[in-house]
Image: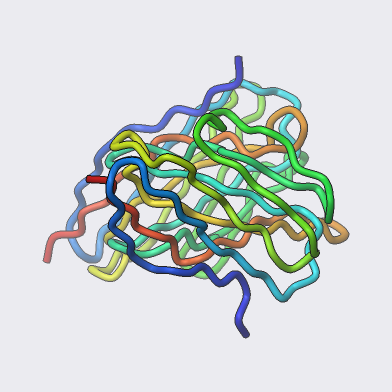
Length: 110
Length: 114
């Protein structure tokens, strides 16, 4: 069936780059997404990429998509303490419902 | 800029009580969704709607009901609340414009069933 997998935890030092990885199974996905959830808050769309692209850059965020390996990554340059949150990867599965990963908890240490 | 509004933000229920979680969006989106998020877990889809008068079950619909009488509102009803329904509930609406397909989320309702 459809599945999205992410590593659960990542810890980086302030100012370093963070790379959060995600693998998915549905090769027919049209869009792939990164959402951010801060403690006690809802989900905020960070960025998304159309499946015919292999890279998208938006300020400090870089998304890389490898369709052959079904691998999506989110790179955050110059990571700040305000970037500490849970990051969810999601893809559009069958019937256009979103399939979600379990989230990667990013801890940024001063 | 209201977006997706959920009420209440917090609620404590006793086992067997009922309640309705409210969700409203002002973006004229046809698609709306209800998810639950358990601690340390991702999102599970409870119900969704593709337009007024049309609803369908998601992965975990048991113990819940929905209705969609207007484009704006998509309430979620819990009948006979159980401790297993303790969770954070998120409502979302979906923008399927040209070249995009994005879900926007409300701030969530934190529900405890004791």
